[in-house]
Structures are given as structure tokens and as C-alpha cells.
Amino acid sequence: MPRGRRPEGLHALSNAERQARYRARHLASPPTPTPTPAHRPHRSAERRSRPQRWRDAVAELLALQAEYAEWLAILPDSLRDSPSAEALEAITDIDLEALADIKPPKGYGRD
Image 1 (cartoon, rainbow, N blue to C red):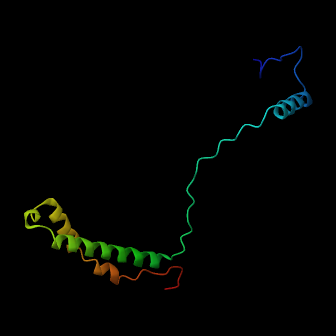
Image 2 (cartoon, rainbow, N blue to C red; image 1 turned 90 degrees about the vertical axis):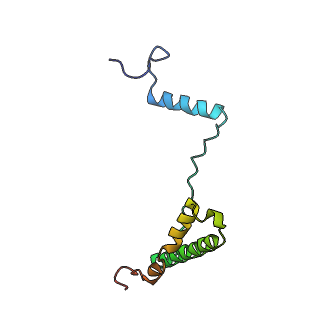
Image 3 (cartoon, rainbow, N blue to C red; image 1 turned 180 degrees about the horizontal axis):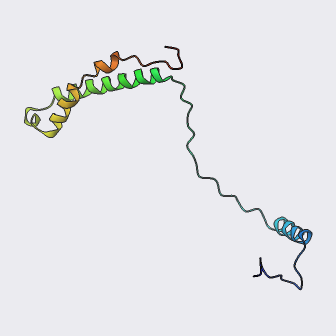
């Protein structure tokens, strides 16, 4: 079974002839713009330690819970039996103070 393309001339090109043809073809034509690679978002270096990230997450949860408690407090009486009110009550009933009391380990024996 023959391999590769059929020669354009009477004989197949040698490696040197093929390389010369390639160089001539690329020097003659203007360079085509290379497609830009798909943009990968740059991962920012996380500088906070895990314990600090834990404290920040718990603080955010406590702040959100306080906002939901305020929302529940100003909810009109006509909406007190609605699914939204039930969800707000469920959120405000969660004891997040227990999460705030947890001190995660520093890791690698630095506890």
C-alpha cells in the first residue's frame, strides 16, 4: 500500500528540496495571524490561610443570617404563612454561633 501523497513531478522530493519549498512558501506569503488561545482565567493566588478563610466564611454567614432576620422582622403579616417566611425562619433558626466557636487546625503539626 503506498504511503504519503503522490509526487507532483517525475520523482519524489528529497528532504532538502521539501524543506526549500516549505521555506519559500512561508517567506512568500504574509504571516497569518495565529488564533489566540482560549482565555483561561488567571487563578489569583489565595493568600489567606484556611483558618482565615473559615473565619471569613463564618462571618459572611452570620452577616447574611442577620440580614435575613431583619427581612423576616419587616415581613408583612399577610406573608407570615408563605413559603418565603418559612425559609426565612429556617435560616434564622440555624445556630451559626456553634460554627463561630470552632477553631480549625492550622495544619502540619502547627496546632
